[in-house]
Length: 366
Image (cartoon, rainbow, N blue to C red):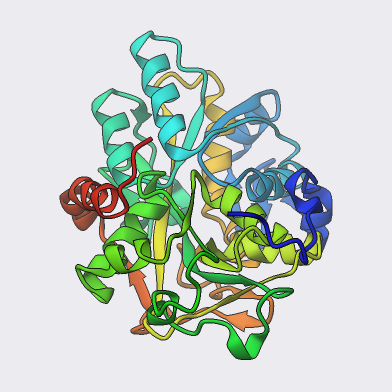
C-alpha cells in the first residue's frame, strides 16, 4: 500500500534524543541523598546499603532489554544521574532477546548482569535454562506479589496496548473510539497491526481480542487488509509517516513521538478497554557486576523509578505511584472494566494457541 503523502515522512529516520525525552517527561528530581552511613537514599527510600552502593559505583552494569530503546534510555539516564552508576545496554525485541540470552547461556557466555523482558513464557524459558539468580529486592519486601517465581525475577511495570491514529489524516471527531470501529470497514486498507508473535505485548493483545472481542475478531481485522509490522516501534513510525491512518499502538510510544518529535499522533482509550502486559526484570546467574545489578533492580522498584515509568506512560507496579496520564489522557484505573491484564497463568496456557490462530486467521508466515 502506498504511503499517505499528505503526512510528514521525516519520522522514518529521525532518532529520538533521550535527553529531550527526559526533559519532556520531567520527573521532579530532588536528587539522591547519601545517608550518613554511606547508603543510597532517594525520596526517603533506601535503595542500597553502604557496602553494596560503594561497590556498585565501581562497576558498569550490563543490561539486556526488550523494552523500547528510547524509553529504556530515559530510565538509564535518570538512574545514572541519581546513582553515578553507568549502564551498558543491548536492546532487542523480546523474541530476539530470548534467542540471544538462551544462546549465550547455553554456551556459558551470557554477557548480561540483568535482563528485562515482557513475556512470561520467555521469562520461564530463561528460568529453565538457569539464566536467573534469586534476588528479592528489600525495597519490595512488603509487596511480595511483585516478586515472581520465588524471587527469580520481578514485575516492574505494565505497558499499555491501545488504538492510535495519525492526526493529519484523521480528525478527532472521526477517529475510532472502539475496537469494533477498527473492523467496521471504515479503515480498510488504511490500518496497521503488529504480527502476533513479536513478544509479550502481542500475546496480551491476542488474548484480549479473543476473550473480550470474540473468537472471530482476528478474521474481522484481517479482512481490513492491514499492513503487518514486525514490532510496535516500526508500526508507530509508519503511523507517524502516514503509511497507515490507524493502528494498534503502545501508548508510551505515541506519547514519546508526539511530545518530543511533534509527530502527528494520538491514541484513544477504546470503549472495550486496553490490553496491558507485564515487564519483568531479574539478575542473571552469571552477573559479574552483582552490586550494580542489585542497585538497578532496587531503583526500578523504588518510588523514583516507578515515577519515571509512569511519566513515560506505563502503569507502575507499585500501587502507591499514580497511574499514567499521556497527552492529557488519564488511562483507566487498574480496577476499571477497561483495564485488561493477562495473568501469568493465562499467558502460559493460551499464548501458543493464540499465536497459531493469529497466524492462521491472518494467513501470516515469517
